[in-house]
Image 1: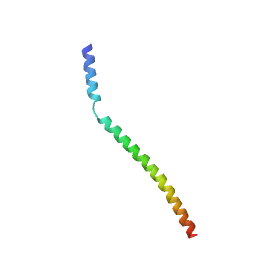
Image 2: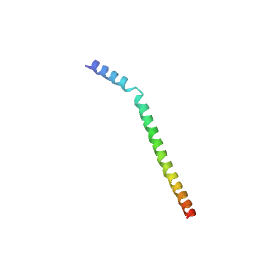
Image 3: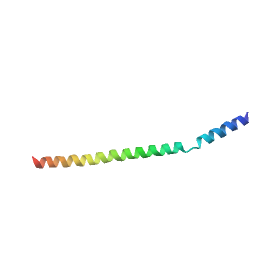
Image 4: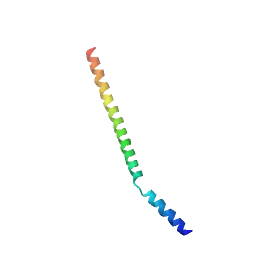
Length: 61
């Protein structure tokens, strides 16, 4: 019985040692970081653009 357990254990360890999951996690972290930076940039630049448009609109009127 111990031999079967060792075989299954070795098979599972060989299957779990692939780095496909690590690559997926790295890509997910990169996408999340890019999303956060994009949201912050749009928020910051959006407020500045709104302020500029308001000042230009006030100057025209």
